[in-house]
Image 1 (cartoon, one colour):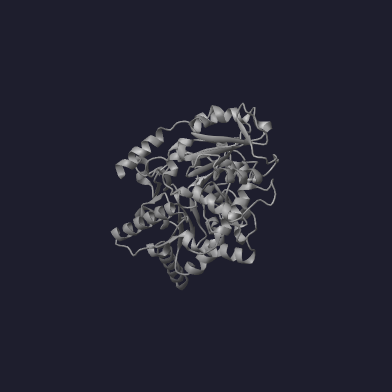
Image 2 (tube, helix red, strand yellow):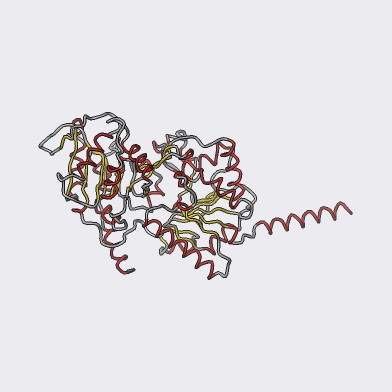
Length: 470
């Protein structure tokens, strides 16, 4: 009889623990907005923070903790998330239940998100998000899971993603025992998922249907706890094409195959464009900058372009775009995006990669997707005395080191792409209006341009809706 009473009591306790564990107070959720130091991005992050606080107030809840990632520490590597985990664990590891990461353009319905988090036992190690997977093994993921690429899922950061505090604490212990490797950061969402999974020792991503990447006004979004605000930001009138100087890096061996693709696709939308080569060919025409061609890294050529941009040899513009001869880019979309940035600030914009971020390191704009510089950024770079250690040094990485030394932020836009469309998850590209892709390898570049980058109706629509909002 006593045994039966004991059993009943244990069941009651289990029942109590079961239900008490799943009650999550909003104060136990720490929101980390993956913000950036550029003034436009600070503004976007502040808008999201304000919206979350207003929602909490409307729900008559105590406000949650909302952190702007770029303000937390002086470590350049914080944006790569893993180096930030020990800080989050030390600050919130005892009194919080969840760390919820949001991008600036993620929109949150707090009451729905609250309902989602209540379904999970916060004492266990949970990694929640909207799952992406690769259709085929891809260079940007170092051909991981080449046998079955679809088997590994990683989160679409645009939908928001969450770590239980239990997982944050255990990852912190792992980082403290074995410091993060000094390595490249290329596709952060995939690399974070791989680190957490740890060859099967850690949790896999748990897919959450309520974390969505639909635009917030779509009917399907009514069931979502998160949505995405806009495919591509437009902040006013697009920058005029004659205010962007375009520099195309090429060399003699690509004059006959790559340069014609540039001319047939995107170059016709440029007002000011020059081709820079190791050989002056008047039929294109190309300009020989006096820098010999190198098989890898084009630092000498890129720095010669920066110097030319500030010289009297070219018209004075606020913006410089440097691309490879196998970059495919939409100039109208870039013009629309640049309406959000202040050219009097030092702006360096494109797809951000990192090197050695676990140990300090630096960020850089990867060259193939296109590197955009404001005039002020170029002035500061050249005034600093920064230069190449050799002509064939990797130009994008050397520029990253220089910018890091100057404390000039490298600004990331996911709309620039270092690889081809097929190198990215379909679901990831589905909610984007891409600005660029790179490489002609095994594709028809003209067909890719026509499919992904030609149609500019969306920029007209966005400008119209922006004017209405204003």
